[in-house]
Length: 284
Image 1 (cartoon, one colour):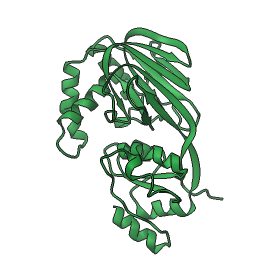
Image 2 (cartoon, helix red, strand yellow):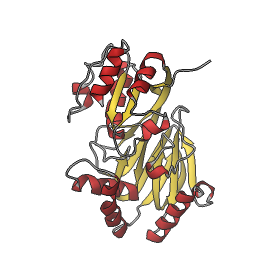
Image 3 (cartoon, helix red, strand yellow):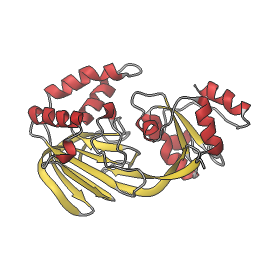
Image 4 (cartoon, one colour):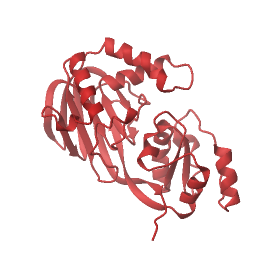
């Protein structure tokens, strides 16, 4: 995909440098190469976007996602495709749109960049199960056994949620998400009101005492009716803190966090307009 994109770019007079990702922190291998560049194209999944987003923000350059992962939520949000001609058109004529970037803070660990969302609960358990058992690239089928195992051992934590200094929920057993984007796996989109350019984070709390409650919420999600339920807690704010009664796993943008696996307290704060994307060229 990268080589095909490079060929099309050269044909249309766009200079492009290809580089592979590295396993180390992005600042050690990405910061210098993108200095003084006009844009950054990320070929991979949402995890690759998360790795690159903070460095693109520091460099002050817009980002394009050429989707090559499972869900590709970032690309879906902005209508980005694998078509090299479409990518080059954005590079040549696209307009810059400022987006928010979030940071997750856990005591005693470096902060985590959050592009899309973070959560504590069932989906975090699935993500960690998959990460600990996978031996190669994952696909949608790879999630089946982790989902079944997580469902079997599911026991929700008691959650307390604080938005901009005000307690809005708990402590009660629940599944909870902090979203910067409305997109989610399997197009369930729990935080359907979230926007990436409003300077706010969206909090979604689903009171859940066990597997039966979890199944009911899933059914509502599939029908797109969960936001109407009176027991749902949905709030927006610039700072959201989650506290749980015992250490619980959390996930960020569909992957385990880089530094801390289990948390008792997680604080997520948004930085408005911190990074940008190249959208379709304006017409008219």
